[in-house]
Image 1 (cartoon, helix red, strand yellow):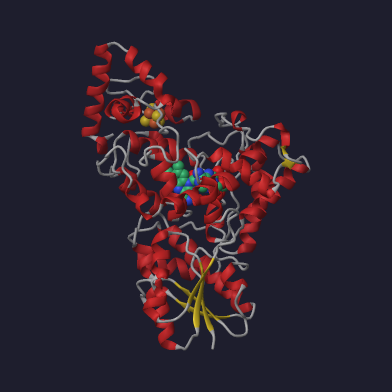
Image 2 (spheres, helix red, strand yellow):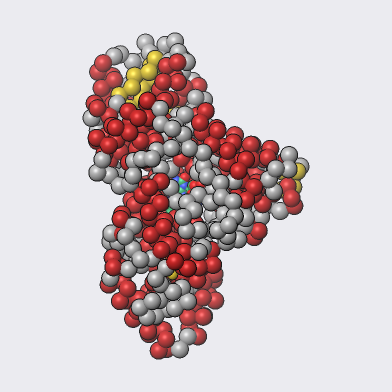
Length: 507
Ligand SMILES: Cc1cc2nc3c(=O)[nH]c(=O)nc-3n(C[C@H](O)[C@H](O)[C@H](O)COP(=O)(O)OP(=O)(O)OC[C@H]3O[C@@H](n4cnc5c(N)ncnc54)[C@H](O)[C@@H]3O)c2cc1C
Ligand code: SF4
């Protein structure tokens, strides 16, 4: 009897463990597009189109390669993966179910219920696409007082041998971040990610998304993402050729109208499995070894993938499903309406949100220091912030989005992931971007009608949370600066912040 091999929408890798252990001749692959997966948060239209199109192309590739694939499309209106498996088991006899472990708690819990529900053995295999398994990460974390990415990253460098010269890091340092803080100038050559024309499969998916999910956030077209592995590899080559050399230097920069700068726009391909982390890093290392990219770029980029990406994933599984309800500051304000419309006078937020609507993409500093920072300073309910990030980005899957949002950007876990809140005033945004030059607000002012809202909200955030933050050694100098301000000035800042918080939607 055949085994049922279930392949999920973020498991589009031909060497995935579930397929590696299956038999082309005997087994049946099940892929499905449950409606519940597109709607449990109302995902961006472009994100849904990307995943469905990539899934349909992957299914076609499997069929061309000789696999038997049963594909249950959106039109069947199946609510969940469980319903898809149930329909399959009703239609045919299977001896067992095999699946690669899910990317997130919600889906893994669903899978864990199958054995009892269907009365069949269910084999859950490890996801070998990650360099550190959940168990490796838990072992590394055991007994440590604080989990910090930098130490984990060094272990990953040693484990993979990437950018290593014997047991020493290439270039003599583990981390070249101090070279990577330059603001970008508008007259620099700006590469663009490679764009792909939708083929017939993608065109069908675009119509389907318009029909079923037309009222979701964001623009569906123009649609230019890669949806096949071959295209994703071309996107990787194009990035290495055109943008990687400057990736490090301008990693934290932001510029009006420049949506991608020197970023790779590869996260979505990595996260669904069209690219594998090690192949991306090996190609980056090769470019460094032949002298095409400097060490600060190669190291900075590889650190994002074998450092941050792996660390975030290990952290997510280590924390458990309750991590999602973290709310260290007890923040409870609703998300301002302009997070959905982009309709705000604050240019930094308008730029980040408008491009998010149009591209389902914003780069890291926009997510962290613009939309994330503002939400934290304004005391927005972190769960609402989490749901927003999960819905609006094409690369958003809970395992990577949640620790980045709740831990890194909102400090909602009280410092399990970050050693201090990533809070910044208008001055930070002014230093790293040209947004403020086009804004009605002034980043140098703290109070008054024209004052940048980030400024008063920044001090108000610290004051509001003094009790839980004052003991943080990294914030000591900032509280000291606040303390040195004249009483009337402090009172004026807090009163301005209160007025801003009362009219967030009007800013
Ligand atoms: C609030 C917030 C939410 C985020 N949500 C997501 C998300 O849902 N999905 C996601 O993949 N990333 C998320 N990130 C991390 C990061 O912003 C994106 O990975 C990055 O912007 C993707 O664009 P890129 O491919 O051009 O990245 P690049 O800047 O080119 O970086 C290269 C690669 O490194 C990896 N990477 C970089 N930073 C991180 C990080 N902090 N965590 C994990 N991987 C990282 C990504 O795979 C990325 O493709 C989030 C960050 C913040 C602050
Ligand atoms: S002045 Fe303030 S609100 Fe305006 S762009 Fe600068 S940081 Fe953003």
